[in-house]
Length: 101
Image (tube, rainbow, N blue to C red; front, side):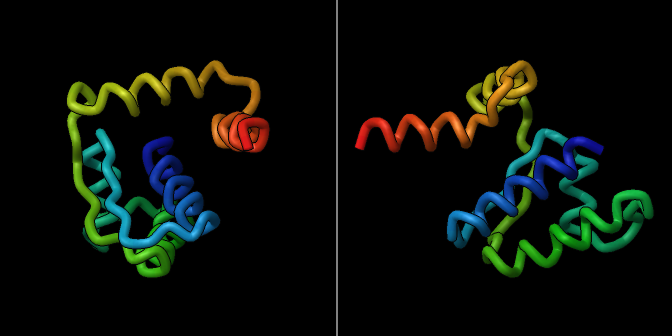
């Protein structure tokens, strides 16, 4: 499920950039439920969810919760833009930061 991968990638990003005390927001109630609760997790996603469990403690994720897509228009528009982007957004932002320094 793409929503689980999104949570996993967000937490990997936090780990790689040394971000701590983060909160996870997702518009997928199912993915958030699997992150919060250890029961009824689909076996096909166990590897990703187990990685999420480990990363949650590593970056000290304080909370994971559902947020309606309509309440988070910036993240929704970035996600839509990311689907059509050739270069990763992080790479583009990093390049822009280097050029501006």
